[in-house]
Length: 443
Image 1 (cartoon, one colour):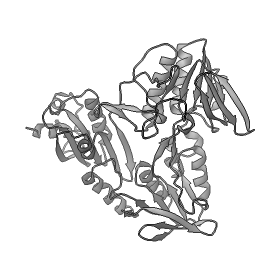
Image 2 (image 1 turned 60 degrees about the vertical axis):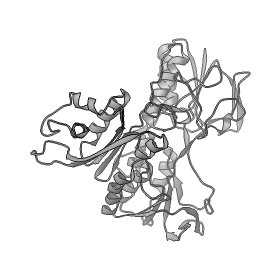
Image 3 (image 1 turned 135 degrees about the vertical axis):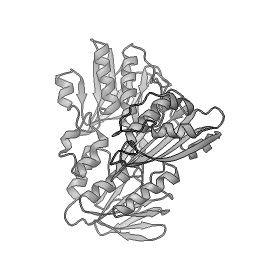
């Protein structure tokens, strides 16, 4: 059986490893358009900031490891340009030699991930304008961060924008965040995002809201950002305005793609075409709370979907159970966590909901060193089913978010949180966890 995988990072290599575990006679061919395999993209801001000492530290397994240890035919610089569904052929080009290739498959996995969104703004050809998605992107940013770079401007206030704002400040740079919307971190509700704005101000990050970037100017190197409301001097620009699934090469294949550009898959990672699977950032992700297919590209989901795709391709049926939209990020002294849906999403879904908000210490109130947790829970007005949670604080956020994520996965009610047997000792918690304290208030 010839298994061909397009993409050699999270979903692709999770699938490859699952295939060789399941099918001892498998012939696994992986086509990666870049030069690196199986690395942690989420670690790149910490490499740039110097917390992770070397960029090689985020590489989980090298391409040689996959070739020599696991007998996987791992190719680099192989960009797929077309799939012939009728002949079951993958067609592309070796970008280092410009030679074309045709590879036959019995089963195919598309795990091409998502690319950074790069707008067609004026001045995009100037030096000093970066995005951050690959190891090479990180290396270019590090190379450009000379002593002459004083003012850094980040376009986009999502997770990458926030993480990189912290990294640049750690390097002693002046940082400006420009966000088109009216708040940073739009995956949080505005009342919770206010805490993020305060943290940015506390650490000297200039935040500009409600302005849209229109272009850049400079001689050969960027020196000015132009928005719809003004212009700003800068020495370096990072574009962090989101990602889009890398699926353009699938046009005219008949593979169903949704309005976000993500490949539509079922629970078994199957596409609309026989013998073709998809997983990771290029595919849809079933959202348990929304009860619909969503697109929330995260490394955790990509690895899970890749493993499930590999198992199904190799004849061991497994179903992907879905996501609840859990994520967490460090922003200076704060940890920002969320899971489930926000008020904005609840309104879009026309759900009848209630909210409860609470501040509490992350440990027993009498134990020294307690840090305040800001907690917001959403639940269905009639059924009381938990719908979502947002937690921001300096300590104990990850514990509460993971408890809430587990509760959401199991579609528990707000009342059932009271029955959870959660760990307790004064350095870590009170006898009633803060999320249980909220549940006790609900009538």
